[in-house]
Length: 98
Image (cartoon, rainbow, N blue to C red; front, side):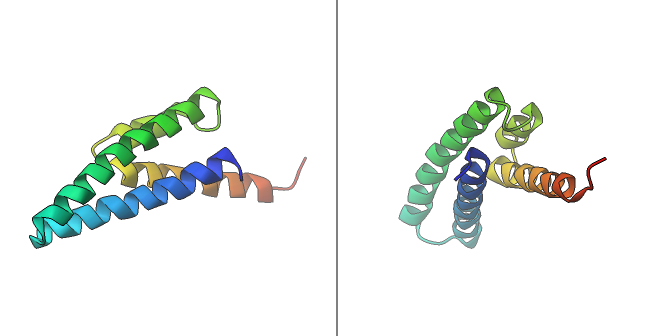
């Protein structure tokens, strides 16, 4: 599996975790569930930032993706940016050579 694909999958997972946290928080559900999701998202987001920064250093990702990742949009911004890159890569692969 490529580094791009692995980070793409992890970013999607972290987005799901963040969305779950928002639903529990806004819905006023169980406090212990909110705390567990908060801790998991916090450490997961830090790990995602490190993965994206490493990918930028290796030139797998452009540096603007790291800005999307550390922005207040967090994993949602990262997932959006990665999907834009994936679409761009597909478009380049489909273009005829020459």
